[in-house]
Amino acid sequence: MKKKLEAWRSELLHHLDAELLPFWLDRLWDEEHGGFLTQWDKDGKDSGVDEKSMLAHFRSIFALSLAALHGHDHDGRCQSLATRGVHFAIEHYWDSKYGGFYWLFDRKNNVVIDQKITYGHSFVIYALATYTLAFGDPIGLEYAERVFDLLQIYVVDTNYGGYWTMLNRDWSLAGTGSGGGDRKTLDIHMHLMEAFTALHQASGKEIHKRKLSEIITQIDEKILHPEYKTGIPMFWGDWSIAPHIKFDIIWGWDRFEGEDGEKEHAMDNTSYGHNAELFWLLTEGLKSAHIPLSQWEPTFRKMLDHSVAYGVDEEYGGVYVEGSLTSSIVHDKAKEFWQQAEFMIGMLDAYLLYGDEKYINAYENVHRFVFDVMINHEVGEWLPLLERDGTPIWAHMSHSWKVNYHTIRAVVLSIDRLNRLIQKQ
Image 1 (cartoon, rainbow, N blue to C red):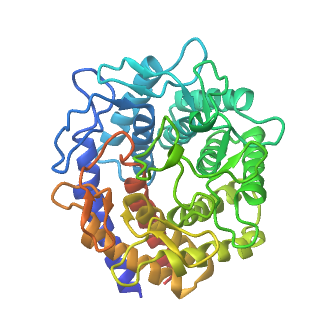
Image 2 (tube, helix red, strand yellow; image 1 turned 90 degrees about the horizontal axis):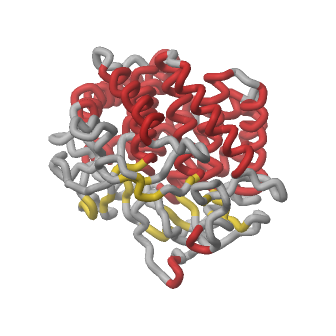
């Protein structure tokens, strides 16, 4: 086993140092207008899309900061780029009237969409707290705390608890239905949890620990299926289950189409990758909040075992996109980059925690699929979406939503977990 672990670590280190980080370090900064460029075609060339996003910008700050935090700083280039990115965002993307960051810009950094999207602001907190943890620059924590405070004032539902999804520039709720102003989501609460975890680690403040514990409880009591512990994607304000729909303003390339943007199997749908991601993010949050992991073992086992049993493709390798909350039915057998990334971290964490061979076997399955099929080694990044057998559906390297957050994080944290396993061996 030790030889396998070392071989996997060697592959990951080579990919990170020779392919993945160079891809981003050589391309990110916009020398003409400032800010980050994230529109790259299948060959890693500028696709020319006239768009920059708050989400891509802060995800890039996070990825660079995380790499440096774990000792992969490439002669200070990660720190230099992250610092430029933080100061540029504060100077150009911060709303000086209402607070918070605008959502979308053109290449010249003119505001195109001025709405306040909770999902995006979760990554602001996550990125800026991680930036301060990595480099000690207090401005990151200052603005992370500012955004945290805005969320507590404007985004918390004081009736039923939890956080709203879509808001207008002035932090009033956006419209209903596809406007997103009447919905709560697994996505929002999972990413706020990871953000509050990093924020508490950076600040040490009791209020951040308390809000972290609160959102962990909401995930446990409201978002996980009561029996199967799989994640439910979408809810109404009172936490009753809502159909999984596509919002007018999206943060990914949703592939489903239907009446009113409603997803097929809208009431019986879970993401295998999300469940693996939720597991390992919960373990990090629980540790930061000083809640014993042992209390969560029954939940974690059900969540993990559903994903391993039904989400892993034993024939072609990799993780399917999504399937039924409660059964073995797979709704979407395509292979998307971020599910593979989160499965890698999740399975290593599960094996570290429980020592069950099925988790390390699942890791090996996904690791091989990623390195043999999903990574474009000539260019340096991961392909975004493949058919079940590995045939590319999309081949671009990056756009405003598919950037570096999942890929760099997966590689950096998988190396970290493999180091721990090798030491245990």
